[in-house]
Structure formats: C-alpha cells, structure tokens
Amino acid sequence: MLRVTYLHVLSATAALALPDGFEIHAFASPPDADYPAAITVAPNGDVYVSSDQNGSLGKKPGMGRIIRCRDTDGDGKADEFVRFVPDVDSPRGGHIVGDTLFLIHPPYLSAFRDTDGDGVADEKKQLVSGLGGGIEHPRGADHTTNGVRMGIDGWLYISVGDFGAHPAVGTDGTEVTLHGGGVLRVRPDGSGLEAYSLMVRNICDTAISPTLDLFSRDNTNDGKGWNTRFHHFTALADHGYPRLYQNFADEAVVPLADYGGGSGTGALWLDEPGFPKGLGSALFSCDWTTGNIYHHPVERSGASFKVGQEVFLNLPRAIDIDVDGHSRLYVADWRGGGFNFAGEGKPVGMIQQI
Image: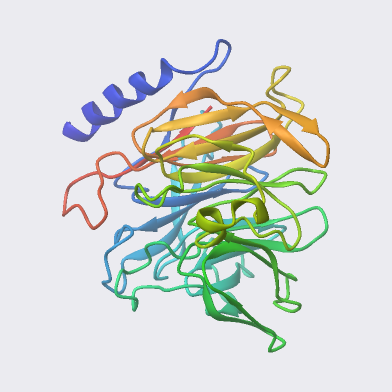
C-alpha cells in the first residue's frame, strides 16, 4: 500500500511539466525494477534497466544486475521482468544493436547476448578493460565511465568520466590513456580503440545525431570555475579541463553553453517522425541536480551549433532518457535514493513511458 501511494503522487507531479499533447505513466518501478543507473531501450520496447543498488559510492559486490522489462499485453506497463544479466558489478549505460547489448560496467565494456531465447544472457564478450574504476576503486564507481552509444559509422562511442582510463585496452591490444574525462571510440568487436574528444570533466552520456554530431551535458567541478557545460564533440578536440580552461582558455574548444550549477546525466538525440514538429529531430539532456529533462533546440552555426534550452519534463533526480522503435520515450529517475544503498524495503527509482 505504501509503495502504490509513493508511485501515484510522484508520477502525477512529473506529468504536470510535460508539453501539451504528451502523456506519461509508470512503466516499471520497485521492487520489480529499482536503482536505475541507466536504461537501454530496444526497438521493440523492451527496457533494459542497469540496476545498481550500490549507487555511485557503494563498493559491495553482487549489487548490480540488468533487468529486462517487457510489456506483454500492450497496456503501456511492464508485466514481465527477467534478470537478463543476473550479476554484474556497477552496470551503467548500454546500447542495443540487433540481439546484442553493449554495456558499460566499469572498468569494462562488454557485449551480452541471449542465444537460447530464455531472456537471460548466456554469452558475454569483454571488449575493453581499464575504463575508470569499479567497486574496487576508493570511491566505488563514482566519476567513472558511464555511457556507450553506436554512431551511424558503426563505431561505439564511450563516455568517460574524470577518473579517465589508465590505460583502456581493446581486444587487439590497443591501449589508450586518458587523464580526465572525454570520449573514446572502438569497433563493435573491441578493436581499433582510440581517443575521440578529450579533456572534459565528468560526462555520463553522449547523444549522437544521424549526421554523427556528438553532444553531452557535463558536470561542474564544485565551484572552481567549470560549470555545467554543454559540449559539441569533434575529433581530437581539447575542451580544456582541468588545465586550459583556467590558464589558456583561448586554446580550448568553447562549449556551446554554460548552464551554471548542475549535474549532467543522460543524453539523447531523438530522430522520430512520430513526434510533434520541433521535437521529432531534437536533442535532449538530463540533469540530476535540477531534476529536469531538457529539450535543446539546435541551429547550425559555422562548423558547430547554437543550442537553446527548454524544460521538457521535471523528475526527482533525472537519470536517463531513451526511445523505442514506436516513438515512445522512456525516462528514468533516482527518486528515493542517495549515493549508496538506501536500505531494505525502501523503493528507489522509477521508469516512465511517454
């Protein structure tokens, strides 16, 4: 009874912020799907929840799993929950390509497949190691590597937090060292690992457009002059953290925007004809601190872009956003949670469908 009341009140509050013409409802919630550090949505509408009861600072083994949430009767709510990966430490962002889930679980990027159709992955291939720290790190999986998405070029683009990679190693033995945050990329078989865009603070996710433009909402450095910057990533660009922005700012790539305080989390380039004009080919980002999911109008400006910012939806501790093949958005939040396990019987998180 307590859990039902909790969901009803906060879902209704979130719905008030949506633009006209949109509806939102709970898709999956605790105890079936909890602690969503990220969500990955398949074209058919299956939602893979990276559930991590450690949060960002916990270091206890066996607290992570990937939960596949499926709506079998078409009512817009998940009614089948399977532990696609029953035990994986520090699960973070992923990307579905065909029958493969590419998953960041720092310090690794791995590929998981269900080859016998029982809903549980029985094949795992480790593609990259050395991507930041996991539960063995003094701060757990905080400020580590959090996201991966495939671009139209077939490369996997990896969002690395400010603990960097020391070094990251691909399947062909290629090594890349990154002292700070940035974007790496690698082939789907783990070969060809390389640095793509460098020297940001602590990004969680990267949105990729159909024309291969990359964007991300960064995190602040806690009052030391680097605010919530919005980046356009290009090959081998130096965005200036932690050195250039203070002493040689004219040598660093200028961000598209500086949004003051905040904590960037999920990001998505939406390219869906089923959405209203202005929102169907659009850029979205999430912010934990403000709780907002933002829509960013984008306008080409020279070799880069101008971006705006409008609140699309307000959530308690917005975490992630993704879309399925039927033009349905899914949003995840961390309501009820902190930086560690909240305790038995305390519901944390919500996944909603728009």
